Image (tube, rainbow, N blue to C red; front, side, top):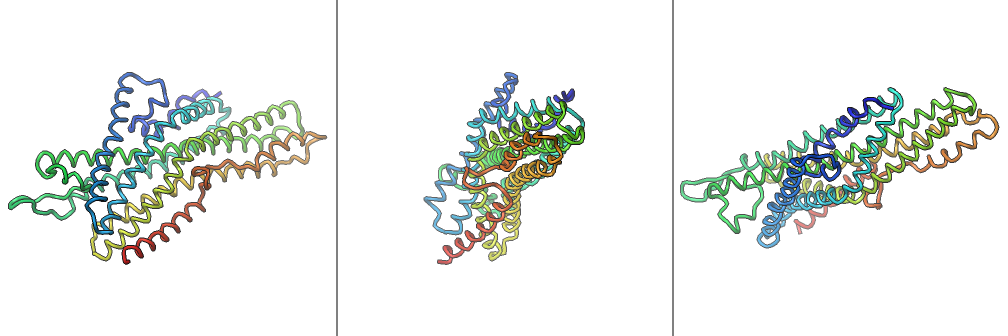
Length: 400
C-alpha cells in the first residue's frame, strides 16, 4: 500500500489534468468538480469550436470561391487543414471521455497498490519522462502557434486602405468579404479573436500529446514493475515455495492488468492517432512546399515561419511514434525477462506454471493508428519520406 499515492497521482496527472481543464474536458472525466468549474468548463467547451469556426468558415469561403492562384490556395489549405484537425480532435476527446475515465481510475488504483519504494521510483521515472515530453511540446507549440497569429501580422508589410491610413493585414483572410475588418474597433476585436483561436487550438494539440504521454508512460511503468517482480522471483527463493507462488500470481495478474490497460488506451486513441498521422503528413508536406516558395521569393519572415511550423509538426509526429515504440520496447523487455530467468532450475513441474506467462509475453502491447498501422519509429520515418513524395507532387502540379 502506497501511503503517498494521492500526491503521486496528482503529480502523474499534473499536465494531463491542467490541459484538459484548459479545453474544458476535465469535468467530463473527473466527477469531483465544483459548480464553478463545471460552468467554466461549459464556457470553454463552447469557446473552442466557436473560435475555430470563426477562422475556418471565412477562410474556407475565401479559399474555394475567390482564390485563383494555386500557391495561395496551398498556403491557405495548410491552416485550414489544421483547423479541421483541431475541431475533430476536440470533439473526439469529448466523445471518448467514457473510455478515458476508466484509464484515469486505473492509474489511481495502480499508484495506490504500489508495494515498495523501488516500484515507486520506477513509476516516477516514467512520469518524469512524460512530463519532460509535454513541457518541450508546450514550449515549442505555444511559441510557434501564438507567434503565428500574434507577431506575424505585426511583422508583415502594411498596406494603405485610404489616403492617410495604413494597416497590418490579418493572418486569416475572409471576413473582409462580409464586413469592414479594418475599421476600429472591428480590427482589434478580430485580431483578439484570432489570438484566442491560436491559444485554444494549440491547447487542443498539446492536450492530445499530454494524454498520450501520460497514459503510455503509466503503461510502461507497470510493465517495468512486472519485470522487477519477475526477477525477484528467484532472488527470494530458488524453488517454488509458498511465498513464490504468491509472487508469481502477482506477476501474472499485474501483466494481465497492464495488457488490459494498454488495450483500453489503444481503443481510446486509435482513431485520433490516425487523424494525427494523416494531418501531420499533409501539414509537413505543405510547409516544405511553402518554404521553397518563400525561399524563391526571398521572404525571410515566411521562411522562418514555415521552418518553425515544420519543426513543430515533425516533433509532434515524433512524440506519437516514440510513445508507441517505447510501449512495444517495454513489452519486449518483459518477454525477454520471462526467458532469461532461471526457470530450468525449478523443481519438478513447477516451471510449467511459467508457460502461460511466456506465451502471453510474445504478444507485446502496441498502439495503432485506426488499426491500420502500428505507431513506431518506422512509421515516423515513413511519414517523413511520404511528405517529400507529396512535396514533389505539389511542385509538379504548380509547375504544370
